[in-house]
Amino acid sequence: MKNVTAAVIIKNNKILICQRSLSDKLSGKWEFPGGKIEEGELPEECLIREIKEELDIHIEVGEKLGENIYDYSYDSINLIAYFATWKSGDIKLNVHNDYKWVTKDDIKEYDFAEADVPFVKKLIDQGY
Image 1 (tube, rainbow, N blue to C red):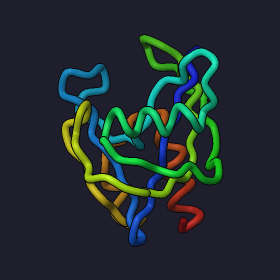
Image 2 (image 1 turned 120 degrees about the vertical axis):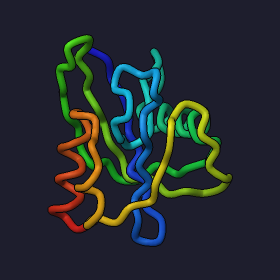
Image 3 (image 1 turned 135 degrees about the vertical axis):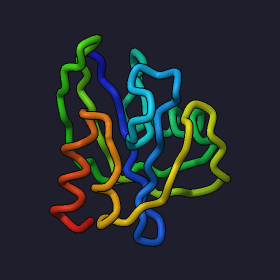
């Protein structure tokens, strides 16, 4: 099982979501950006590194939102989600197809990767 992080970045009461690359196994699905934790790396360190690599922005990691284990047909992951604050930089898509800033009312309209769905529901229920 792979340990993977996800950042729930909120700015001006909107949440950043990213669409997976068209060449990805989950092509076209939406997700909270992040990535695989490397050996010896803390989840928070991973998230800072992955967001810089994927979106070319700097974040500050905040409170943990939760964890979700999901078994895809090709792999099992433990997705660890954290709230994060955008500190600096302009978004540059290095691995994603698209990104959007969405409200909690609009977020449910997007087709999310299955591992991210529990976090979408939690955000809606909590009103973030």
